[in-house]
Image (cartoon, rainbow, N blue to C red; front, side, top):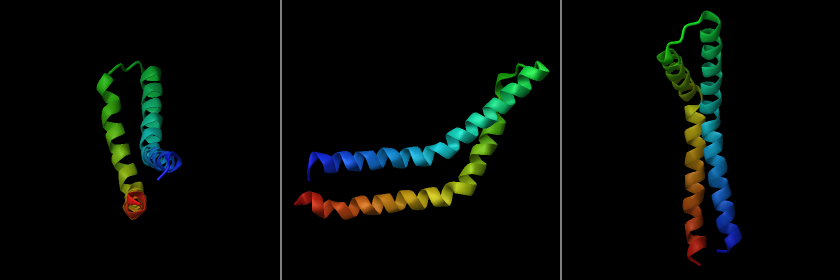
Length: 89
């Protein structure tokens, strides 16, 4: 196993993490921005107001995309385990 192989595995792992985190981060960003604009226009300065919508949106994203995310993660893990015999050589 060469340094290039290790860096390829690490790159794939980072890409996998980014792909799994992106829907959560984008949805939390959008709901946070929406609530912030709502708070600015109505002069409501309650700091905990954004918490409940973010939790619901993140749970909704997990419900909608969780199956695909965990399938992809499972396939990545299976691929890593299949590489173990090649790494031992």
